[in-house]
Image (cartoon, rainbow, N blue to C red; front, side):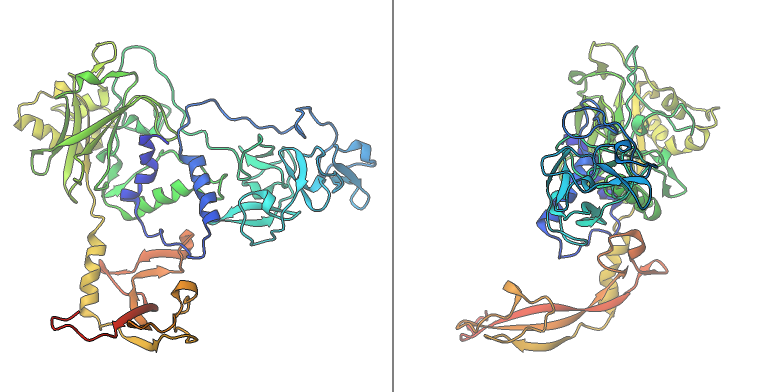
Length: 521
């Protein structure tokens, strides 16, 4: 995964909502499956497109002829190999008759106890509905491995045949996956969740190198999301972020669009950009980074202070952002201040790889102009860039020397959390109950006190005590808040966090048995 795939994961710096809690019952295998699924939608994609098929069975690559599942028939010979003509329905149905090692398209074509793996019938597992799995091979005949929420479990296979329409892989018979809305066979080695997301479409441009700064019009002139530098207050409308057009993988891989959930969360709850955001600028061609010295700037427009920075340059594309980009960050260990407005920009001294000048984007030229633009899409954003115009004027910087720029305002992600301690301070102190002195055979009052958490045998050096303490919970909803309907937001009343309920939480305390030293323990 490239350095810039931080974009996917570090979006959480301002996407942080309240969903990170997860069940302690997750197994390492389940987490591994989820991680693979996330990589499937989040890593670099610099190679060719993946392929799949809706017309082959086995590993020989020959097209199977005959009718598919559900099509009318009078004799087995009319049906595709692996299917039989069912007398009860007079239609082609899976035969459950192909032996181990035989060619298959659907798992249901194989004998009981087998499933279709890479086009061949292979021994199935024993998992039934709800059992943990990593692949279809962990599940019994008639079941397949699927991500349910954020865990991988065996679920009943679907009944949609090869080439039939689907919305997710569980709609399809085992052996198939939902790819671009159709049940299809996957190449050997691909997971049962479907094909990897191909990512954003990047359009190459010829001609002189240019810096991108395109204010979205909502028409066919809009290309990839990051043709407008990001973050950018052009996307901050009436105190609410607008992330329309941000690339997402869709819900075909894991049953829901995990990136879209974060996008929805941030647009619902955030009033500005993140405190650790990097600033991304796209270009149409390669740059000469040797010309960057003195030409990359980061300014706190609220204070007028010039800030230390780090920059990085990347040529390759990822699934989220296209090639030729510069990323500007604050110096290591520094964060942006909540409520402050900043500007990041490059000067025209930065050149293309062939030493030629880089064309300035017309939208930015208009926003830095002395008079309001005439283009309707730019008029609402001219005031947004007034702080930068003022800074340039006050510091005698010619706007014509600004190659590309972004003005962005930091939100207040800590505002609610910072108030929680005050709410706790005015509440009643927590109380502990069911004190239990641990010893061999003594049962702890803690509901999850098993294994190393259980009461231990008596110790010659200290007493071990367990108890339950009642603590306030500020999140509302149903733990572990996996799906949006489960909630998970902080309960807020009049802008102030409020206790939603209390829970009994396990606590342990050890008390030394020795003589107390003169100065205490």
